[in-house]
Image (cartoon, rainbow, N blue to C red):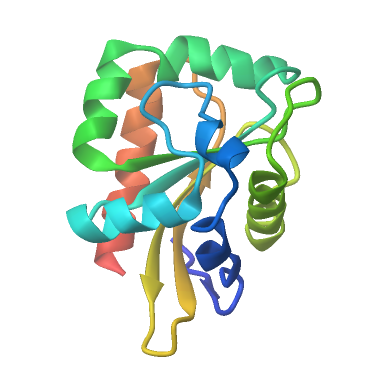
Length: 165
């Protein structure tokens, strides 16, 4: 799978550590998902698991809602995710208020990964170099799948391919 190395695009990660109270109260629509990339990075670093970022329009995107219902809310997916990835939700709702810091983070990641449609799910490793810059090793992306098994099998292939490279 093609690897993408993006430098300096994640300088904002440090900024989210100083988020306001409203950001601290903001939570992902799906249980167990993180909303701050710096938290996902910390957990990824501690566990050695890649980050799986779901770019979603949670309150307006029909395919996003269907993916949540048929995949992300299923016990089989939750068990698989706990063992294999760090979950990051990057939401672009139309009716729900998202804190400015999260909006900025999500927009920057949308640009960095060139996301043009929803749902788009990227799997990647995030590393920090000696200068405090973050490097992204994009392992691959996917979108809607009709079952948890189909989705997790696809992501397993992405992860396995990333380990080979």
